[in-house]
Every structure is written in C-alpha cells, then in structure tokens.
Length: 138
Image 1 (cartoon, rainbow, N blue to C red):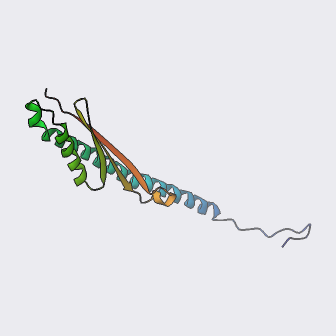
Image 2 (image 1 turned 90 degrees about the vertical axis):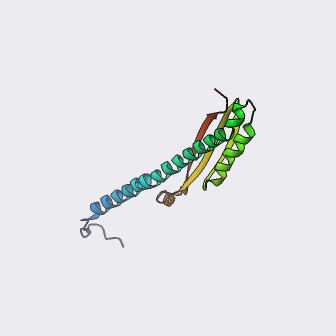
Image 3 (image 1 turned 30 degrees about the vertical axis):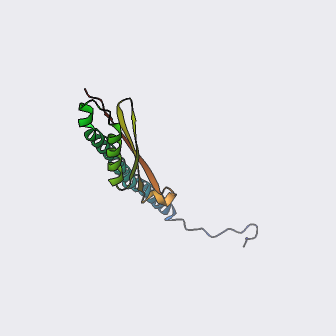
C-alpha cells in the first residue's frame, strides 16, 4: 500500500540485520573450509592408497620374474600377471600394467566420495598413482 504524497513512513527497525548477514557469511565460509579439510583429506588418502597399490603391484611384478631374469629368460608376462593380481586384490583401486623397454609400469586410479562438497554437486574426487620398476638384470 502506498502512502499519499507528503506523508512519511514509520521508521523500520533494522537492528540485527547486519549481524544476520555476517553470521550467514561466516557459516558459508565455515562449510567451505570443512569441505576442503574433510573432503580434501579423503582425496589425499585415496591418492596415497592408489600410489601404494601401484608400488606394491610393480614390486610384485619384479619379484615374480626375478629368477627367470637371472637365468636370462624374458619373463615379462609373469611380471604382468603378478602385478595385475595385486590390482585385482585391491578393493576400490583400478589400474593398468604395461611393459616397455624392460620397464614394468603400473598406473592406478581411485575415487573418494565427498561429504561436504556433494552439497555443491561434487560427488567424487579422483586420485591417481603410478610406479615403474626395472625388469632388467643389472
């Protein structure tokens, strides 16, 4: 409803509005920081796990083919099988194993589910790892 020209409005009490805005801004910042700390920590943990599994798979591959390599036989197929077996036993981690120029390379991938960042549409964070091992006899 509009007032007639020349009439004044009653003063509006605005006390507390600036505090409400400040509290809203601080709470939003708090959720962002929690999201970065908690979900970021989960992502770092998933990346570390992917790296550890890659290193375990590469080590298993070199161990599996060590005796054949010492005898002078190329047994890269046994190295690949052993590395893939480690990947298959590792829940939540996928990967690929390749052999090229006497090197066994393992690339792994993992994902962590988010807690706070899912509120803004980020449901998962990716993590990758890799490791390389020499298959040559020194």
